[in-house]
Length: 379
Length: 257
Image 1 (cartoon, rainbow over the protein chains, first blue to last red):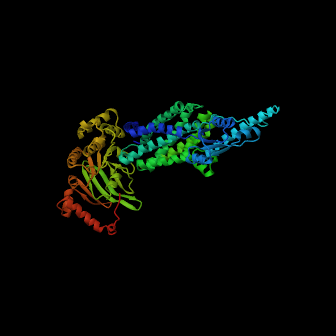
Image 2: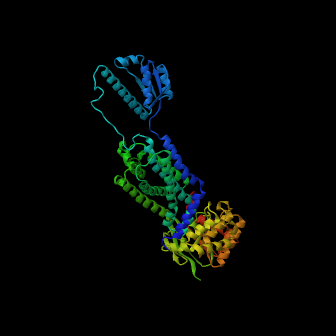
Image 3: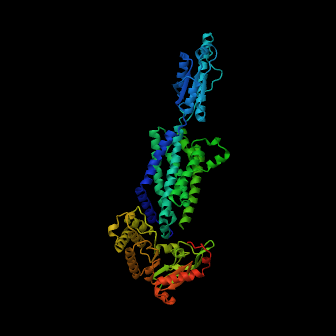
C-alpha cells in the first residue's frame, strides 16, 4: 500500500496536461511571457550610450568649428542636430530634455586653434550619471585626439620629426564582449530571470488552484501519496521550462544575434539544475499562498531583488557587504555567473564548478524543505 | 453482524480548543448513519478522523476493522468520500474526472474501464460523459462526484453534507441511490442539515459543541424525548444544550471548526 504507484502518478500527470491544454492563460503565460520579457528587456534595458541628441551653439562659424562638430558626430555618442545661438536657448533644450548635451564654440575658435589654445565648452545633462559619464569621457577623448594631431602638425611644420609618438601609450583591449554591447550582457541573464518568473508562477498556480477549488481536500481522503502527487504536478512544468528555455535561446541567438561562445549542452544541463530550484521556489510559494492572487504577488515580490541583487544589472562587487550576502541567497545569482560564463566567456565546468555546486545545494535544500512542507499540508 | 465503525471516546483538540469531545458510537455494516447538528459542532472533524485524515488526540476508532491511527492508508483505499464542495475538476470532462479518480484509486486497464462503465450506468451519466463539469448543474455535479467516490467499490461511503444547496428533485434522486447502495451492503456515513434526510437514516447521531449528545434510531430518539417530529427534537436539543453551555453566557464566543 505504501509503495509508489505508477497508476496514481500517471493519473495526476495526465490530468495536469489536460489542465494546461485547456487553460489558455497558462499557455499564453508559458509562451508569451518569455517572449514579451525578452523583447522588453532586450530593447529597453540598454545601458549603451549612443546618439544622444546634442545642441550646438557655434559662434565661430568657420571651417574649423564645422570640422569640430562633425568629429563630435563621428564619436557616435552624440548627434549634434540642433543649432542655436545663445545660452537661453541651450537652457531651453536641456531643460525640456530635447537635448542631453550642448557644445558651445567661442567666436574666436578658428583663430585660437591656429595660434595657442582654443577652448570648447560642453554642457552635459547629469541627471542620468551613466549618460553624463559616457559623454564626458567621449568628449575628453576627442579633445585629446584632436590636440595630439594638431600638436604633431605644429611640430612637423617647425621641422621637428618624431613628435607624433607619445612617451606612454596604454593599449586597452576588451575581452569577451569587445563591442561592449549591453545586450550581450543582458540576454543570457534573461534566461535565468524569465525562467524564474514564469515557472515559479505557473507551478505555484497549479498547486494553489487545487486548494482554492477544494480538490486538494478530496485528494487528501484518497490513498494518493504526496510523492506521487508532487511528481505528477511538477513534471509538466519541467517540460514547460524546457520549452521556455529553448524559446529564449532561439530568440536570443537568431533575433538578437547573441551567440553562446561555450557549450550549449552544458548550458542546458546547468539550466535544468536551476529549473529544479525554481520548481522548489514555486512549491514553497504554493505552501504559503492560499489563493492564486497571493501566489502571483509573492512571485512579483521576488522579481525586484532578483533584478537588483543578483548582478543582473549592477555588479555585485560594488555593493555593500549586507546586500552582497542577500544576493548570495538567490539561486539566480549563481545561475547568472554560469550563464554569462558560458555565453560570453565560453568557459566550462573547470571555472563554473563553484557556482554549479551552489546551485545543486540550493536545489537539494529547497526541494527537501518544499516537499516536506507540501507533505505536511497534505496530511 | 460485524461493525463498520467502532468509535470509542474519540477526542480532537486544536491547541486549547476541543473540537471533538469523547465521541462513542458503533454502526453495523450496511447501515446508514446520519450526523446532525449545527454548523461548527464538530461533524466534519469527526468525519475526517474516521477517514484517517486527521489524527485523533485521544481515544480509539476502527473503521472497517482498521485502526484510524495506525492504518489510515488501508482505510483510505476502502472508503469513498464526497463533500458539499463537489471536489471535481471544472475544466475536465465527466469522463476525464472519472479516469483521474480511477487512477488515484489505483485502478488500471480493464478493471478501470469496467468500473467506470459500472458507475456511469448506475448513476445514469451515460449521455454526459463528454461534457465539461463546469457546464453541469449543481445536481449533476453532485452525481458525478458520487460516481467518482464509488469507482473503487468502497465498503464505506462518507458523505459530508452532500446535498447542501442542491434542488429537491436532485436530492430525491441522490437519496434513492444512497438507499439502494445501503441495501446492497454498503455502509453510509452522512452529515446533513435536512431533517427529511435524517429521518431516513437507520441511525442518527446528534452532535453539539463537539459532543455526541444523542445516538439511536430516529424513532427511538423521538420517543425518548416525547417529540412528534425530528424538527422539534432538533430544536429541543439545541435549546437545552445551549442554555447549559457556559460558552453561551459570554456573548460572541461561538465555536469554530
